[in-house]
Length: 522
Image (cartoon, rainbow, N blue to C red; front, top):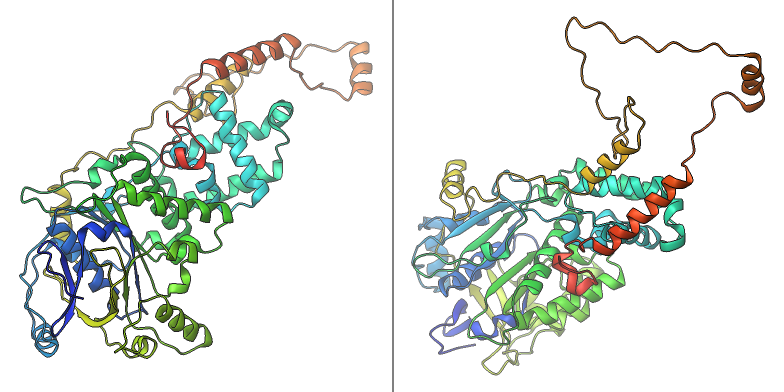
């Protein structure tokens, strides 16, 4: 699979056969598959280096913590030299590449945040594993927040909004439909689980500016953005939702550009099966739509997974550039995967693809990239080139230096908590309380009363007036204290205020999936 284009990216070779990825075809997306330990990480690193060298920013998730070495200059070793010599590969021109480290939890990289409104109800429902009925109730919660002009920025905003809607469900029945208390409870439990997994750190402000991913250094090399995903993988739904949100943000933010000489950005989606596992049909349709249309925005998407069967056929059909590492045919499902992988790659008369897939060595792959006319080239059995940067993770001290010298150092580290739904609902709840009482907070926890000053006398309870005989009879017949009801005047005032709020309130930022999932950006 030779290519004379000097700007093409040499990924692998075997003798005179070279597999080069053409930059103007890189936005046609791709697939990298193979069993654990067959060399997918090295392939990722080599491809990321090639794109960076051309000035193309890259985003990739670091599942095992191995990819951070791309920030450091590589070096030879006896083992590497032996492999290079045996396979007849060129010696790497060792160098480092500009790297920005990111981490949803803000521990191993710069924090990455999005607002609840930006994510939208559909992706949140996917993250919370809600059923169809519960998803409908969550959509109503977002709609009511929109109509009332309440900002949903972080998890406490959404929890407060859910509780307020649940407590006042009867007031919304006529306009919005029935709101089940059981569904509100399921949503609240899901939000609590996300909080316990640390996902609450993902929601809030300042929200990620996608332009910070698309940087180049002084030498014109594209920035390699690495997401620390080792801890994030403990919450696989959060991981998949985050990456889909990021891909959709790219789709919504970038202008239409058509086919370019090289992509504006390349996005690697590792452990891609997590995106499609148990995904509802409507979400799969949206994923397919985003993947198909984001190409025209100049973004290339490369799915990385162990088994090609993990990718739905509708998405698989759009992945033109293929790198297939070894698969093991130990079970009937494995054998089916081998056959599927062989059938989806362009046949080579001199190569039995099905047999070769099970015989590939570590670092060896079957590759078919698109040619200059956009057609899949003949599948070749080749060796992936070793990376020019360091193989393996960086040290804690090197990580600290990278963070301190980053272009976005100090931009996202401090969270901002501005007035939003939580504060509005809390204020509204307190305003309804009679003077001198402790109002429960919007999350159900009573607001703390100010502590008594030292030495101050304890407040005395007001004297209880003596009851007359008719009061006593009334207590016996009426059951004692009567429940206070909202007056007609208060109901009218509340209704009028709600109507005014719906007229003049701004629509909450739905961002990200706004144009795709039916929301609107504020």
